[in-house]
Length: 206
Image (cartoon, rainbow, N blue to C red):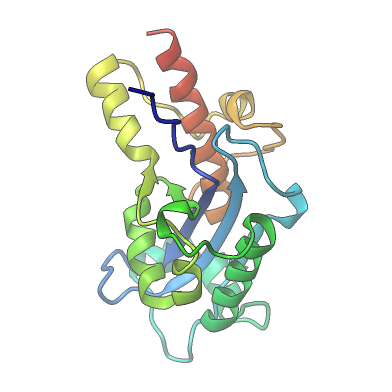
């Protein structure tokens, strides 16, 4: 009996979003960011092409008190002329994926995989608001939070500290992270990529 060739994922679409509220049934998107890598975590596009978009807040649309207090600069930007509408953001991300990964495969199992931390939350909202983006993706998710739980419970070691800039630059391919900026979507996906690299390296030594 011949062994089957392993099915290597075509690409990881690293995605993170900031929301108006943690109540996903009513939340809307405030910021979205995308980086695309291969399965070895190497970028498939130049750094300057990383996507980082602020989403327009409609007039009178409210955000949670926590968001208003902790993400006030982002909220201000979302209420400015620098923000883009959801349909435009959806089209922009879909075009970006097509440019980097090619036209969507007819087989959903051959499409790139959405990746990130607690990415099921982001998946919930992009399915709701970004149909073009969603149509480019595999049905599976790569959630780094799953590895974090296993790392702590199975390996018994401290989890990755995404606020440690030296650690981030050690594991993020190419480095170049100047400061920890937690709750910024683009920073958070860079931290997720570094975190996955950290667990991969650690598991090789277990």
